[in-house]
Image 1 (cartoon, chains in turn orange, green):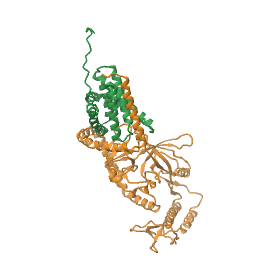
Image 2 (image 1 turned 180 degrees about the vertical axis):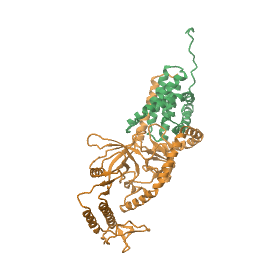
Image 3 (image 1 turned 90 degrees about the vertical axis):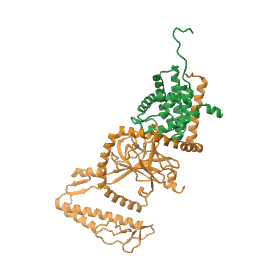
Image 4 (image 1 turned 90 degrees about the horizontal axis):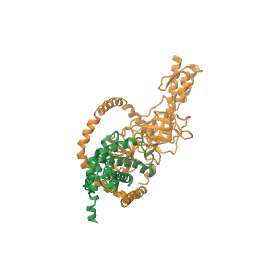
Length: 413
Length: 179
């Protein structure tokens, strides 16, 4: 058996130092190492394919034994979920169309306008530290390092290395992953509290209030007065879609200007394209008309029953933070969030989406998950928020690579 | 030089390493025990230490670690250090017995593997990664060490072949044998 000696110790030391040297070279970025990786990957491909062919039956048998009950339960749960989703699909599609129109008006990038590349997951992390997957699309499909990867549920991670035919994706749970996010909170807590002091809340934002100091007639008069001053118009959207209109109101003369023209919106009187400013004025007028209509309805109800049923407007507030992965089995966490209770109280269940921005690798609006836990930090630091991801990262099969480049990099390519 | 290469251990370690690496990346990624990926390469490095001593264990660990880093995209050398440590520790432990029983060999392989698995986050910490110590590190160490012990009866002979180590032929002298 082996005998320990000084010579052997030198060999071990030399190997450790060589490792450290290679590590330093690799971390500083070395083209030779990158080429080496490509070459070894090419050598490994056929070996891996051959081994996969041999081990696939074993793998399937193992999965069949271990996962059968779970898969059956999951299948039933998914069927229930599917039934529910079909019911809400139509409403969701309408909402998406509306959102696209609004985003087009404001020239904001939206996920719906960015090409994606469907890919299949062909491998996972081969150790217990990294949270990565490998997909079967690479450089030849237009994928490059940094692009976000999503599935139907939301954000999964980002591409960290690419070969011609494969790419590696760092998952959101990896300790090296970070992305800017917004936490969307409904700031109706104060309003609801105020409503509860005067009446009752049914829990879904509708507050039944007792009569205020005003008489019903006075309220009705105020509502009528407000309606008579509304200004709106009808806008015809190219393609046959008509924008929503308020109650019948006088025509408004739209101010001219040198704003960029939005081609999909035309003036119904002159038939000429509208500018961005004109369209925004229309939108404001429509919003005002809708508010007035609601006020008139409330006044009518008050006159009839003596009580009003008021839907508390849910004001959406956004807080910005950085989502960081913390390894497997730990939920990703949002840090450096400035929590300002006067704007929004970040609570469990709040939605988390990517924030976007000119340098962000992910476009805005990709759903990430919901706040699962909140821990307050002493001092000026905002709270720490644990985020329950929408996507189940343990069961990834097909994913989409969003072919997105941040605005700061668009000119460089 | 070519002759030295052919007669040396690398000519066997590399092809065996490719197959083991392929197994690690295909089969063992799905064969998780308690959510832990069994680390075949780490166990092989430790088994090489038991079969051929700390020096050969380190060489085997270094080679397999470099292959792993090149294929997996992890920082080159990070896994190589951990596997070198695994082979060295198992080799040093094997010094306590000239020809260890199978169970003792399994124990050394398990301990070497545990040392290597613990080294991975330590190396990652040194290269500046955030939170490399996962919350279930203890579970990972126990599961990988146990799996390595179970695999050791197959891995030790394989490593002997790779490293061209002949099994010890000496026998313990009888008590009444004159020295």
